[in-house]
Image (tube, one colour):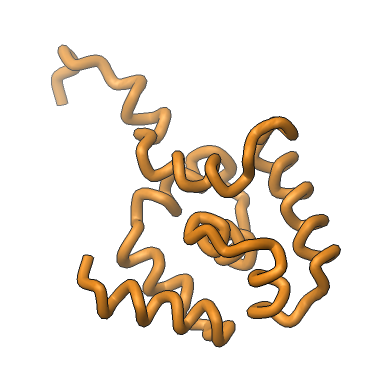
Length: 116
């Protein structure tokens, strides 16, 4: 990934630009795939929120960039914890960053001897 792409991604997030999720998905396609594997019904707005936490934006920053209250961001995190089965004792942002290192469960279940 080029530094310019990353800087552009951050600028899009900070400006609440609709192109943010599309660029994020280009740069980190495995992240979105991982979340969709966990919950195929996850919405684009939720993916965008998860992308911001993946980028390690604070609750306060997410609230500022998306023009909502800090409490609204906290509520959204709690709802996503339930939707994605994230335990309350696990750091939400760290969990999001770990998703890029995990292989989707479908890939893990395939046998190495399987003939295709």
